[in-house]
Amino acid sequence: EQEVIFREAMDECFAILQSVTNINMKEVLYPTTFSIDEATEKLKRMEFSQPILFAFEYSVAKLLMGWGIKPEAMIGYSFGEYVAACLAEVFTLEDAFKLV
Image 1 (tube, one colour):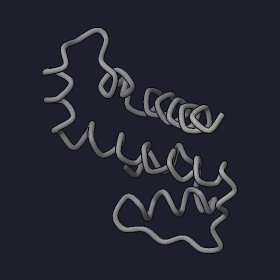
Image 2 (cartoon, rainbow, N blue to C red):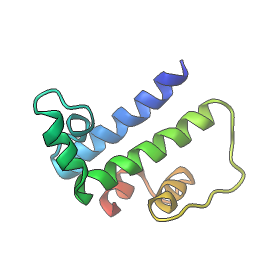
Image 3 (cartoon, rainbow, N blue to C red):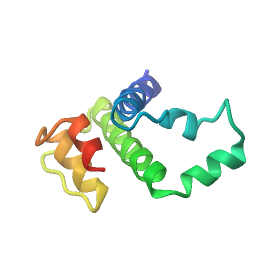
């Protein structure tokens, strides 16, 4: 069940990213229609790697919360700050991806 929490959070992020960027970031991270080499090259570019990193950080946080680890306070560095702000409901996940 724990892996479901992470996967659902990632899928939510991928759906929002698709609507914001018109790019299927899930296909970049888990390529099926293009080569591993092409996916690797895309992940070296900030416009692909940073939103995916944010999605991963957000999903790990959701997983930890699903395990019952409830933060009393949150901090972050760089995109971790956006993850913390998003989890604290300072702004929506969609707004966070627009910033990223």
